[in-house]
Image (cartoon, rainbow, N blue to C red; front, side, top):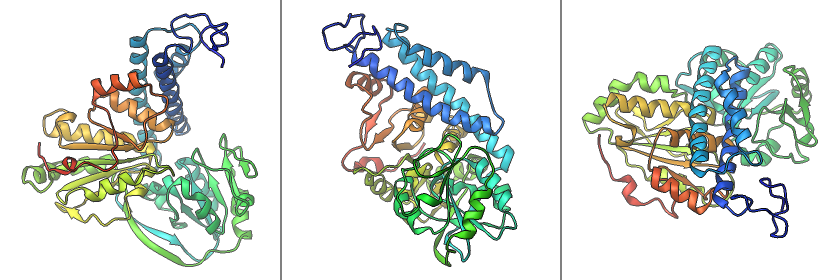
Length: 429
């Protein structure tokens, strides 16, 4: 094994002990946490930049954070922990920029009922997260006789007024990213993967899979720019889709929508109609243990509201949760790129009740998988949010001692085999 601290082999024979050098797992753990957080932050910053939003403080932090992990720079556990939490602060700023970029470009999201399934005729399926790609494709496909469908985390496209205005944005097809092998095989038209969460394709759809910019997989066609003419032409060549509606869903509960109802929500809480709030969502995956979040959501009491976002919502969105105080109990706030919205709602409710976020009747159960989820978790920790349940498995890069520090400082918990009953005991502010 190569040691990046003293540039020697760390097998015990030539490694100079400089206080880290593979012998301090906690320093290595914090360095890896910082690196993963910066990767997630950079992904959000890339989306924001494409929408015209940049910030020098963000750029400077990315440089400094990467510099801090270079050989022989930082051997101080407390200072590195400070930088890890600073990554959370900077990520909050980036997510706020991204939220502003989306609403300024496409309009403020609105509650919208979405057709799920396919309609007769040629179609294109768009997966990933990039709304600007979706906008460009919709504009170029106008009048071409080709429908466009969202997949996975592109579902929120339907809630943006300027995207929804395109009549050929026909509906939503499919679920979370880990199911794309079967779902892309079932969809007869071309598929456009705009960002991360794309898998190396099966032969059944490899010749009709397109990726954009840095996203690339063997066998697919990579589009370097925003010209989607190849995709549109491919759709006309492929077998047309059939009319096949699987249902419909309501999305678009942007933080602006929810906070616009703050007075109504406060009244409902004071009247005892709403007694608890749950945030259930995050990044999904295929490994066992993720049904925990399904059981968790279905165990929530009738006098509660569930906020959900990210592809983790596909674990919980099929259940009928009914309504409470005239609102749907399940409020779909968007994709993982919209995590700022859940934070804004929590802080907004705390302001309305004149209390801290940790004083709210609020429980967070967050599924994690990749680097963007790490960045969001660091943002929550930066804000001092306590009692988060994280799962289904502990991050392998977090050492036992670092996790102990996070437990002591933030009451961070791992998900259990079953959601404990006390999580569903009702409380009020």
